[in-house]
Image: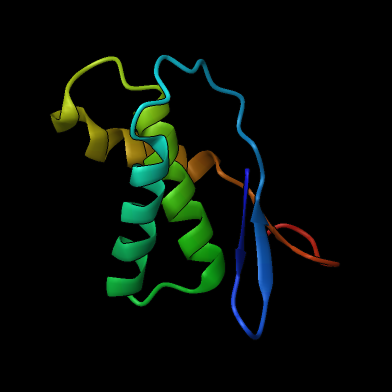
Length: 89
């Protein structure tokens, strides 16, 4: 999981059960996901889901980078995001 914070709000992307094959590049992938979300002007909750999915795609990657886009889309559907004191988005 990961916590995403702005001046106005804080959300947490909950951990997803996954078979981790390699951790190399997972942090860089999350940063790339955050930048991608910012360019798309996503909400903080959407950014948390998007960036976490980027990282999960790298952590579970069995094939080359060409498979990442499909993997990100699949993981994005599975990542739950909660706001402090609130339920899931």
